[in-house]
Figure 1 (tube, rainbow, N blue to C red):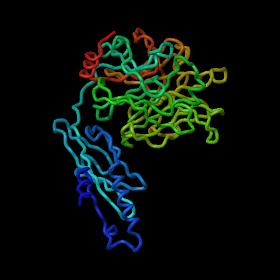
Figure 2 (figure 1 turned 60 degrees about the vertical axis):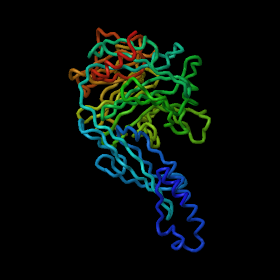
Figure 3 (figure 1 turned 180 degrees about the horizontal axis):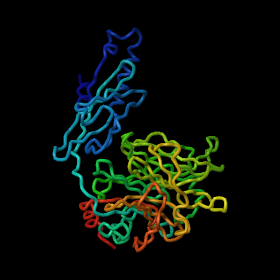
Figure 4 (figure 1 turned 180 degrees about the vertical axis):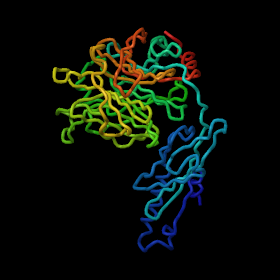
Length: 443
């Protein structure tokens, strides 16, 4: 009874099936049954569900536990949180709610349960976007260049910007390689949570690009926020396989059909029998899916044309995904569009064979380009594509009124922050805009 009381104090409820009772157990199986009971109790105590105190999106409910246990879930209110973790938050004005989730952990005939409480806030009211936030890095030329900087548009003008935080980094890295490149912010589909991810890479002080692609980080950097100002501590999350030599320029897109974020990045993949990554390889685009940016599926190849490609970004319009990617090959007479951007489209974000739209995007206006970021105007049927003229001006803006055409014209009369490199432009509401301005001020 003392052991049972201790388990109740821990939030565990023990369920003994008839097969685990001494009078029902087969001869000679008592010790094995007791071992299973200990295992399921231990596995139940170890279960973790992230973000339960503030559920703003689908949950990852583990279906397996430690020591070969299985986990089955039930929900006291499946219309709000389903047994498989899909979340339907109360409508604006209805108020938040709490939902009790019960995990049944089993192994052979032994089983135990543990309950969790999910706190689910109501959905935010829809608000118009009245400006843009810009997250970027400034390059490897200075000690602080490989960190995260913020800027704000001048009102609702995506071509004129002002630096925030006095032109100093807003987020800096104390983990991994202690450098941050290619920052990317995504807003949750519900609208009130943000994830910022970045490349874990520092080139300043060593300049060894070959080593960075053979023995570089296999992880991405992750932060979370509900207001774009207060960010969680950074965490380093591994997404790439052992065969990867690098994990570059991670981005994400929420896919409604999957109910999860598709996270994609570039990696050089080496042979299984080449653990030191001494052979030849090339970058291809990889992807994994996640609901919480903590637990990811196994990585898979997304783009592999047989030569190096990096820096994909995606936007969806009228049911079509438009993907922009850098052709990383050396520019020669036989590959005249290399070191520029190619555009493709598909009805399925994970389609292995997108349809060609255009290549050589940026050529004639910039000397070369990478790190594209694409976003729609808040005020008109127009899209902007910022392309990083690496080794030159940094980001240069282009615009189009027809994504399907593949035609992009370099913008005129623009003022970007000094030296902006590969990052993200994010439409923001008036409240978010004012909050960023109050928190960081301008340069």
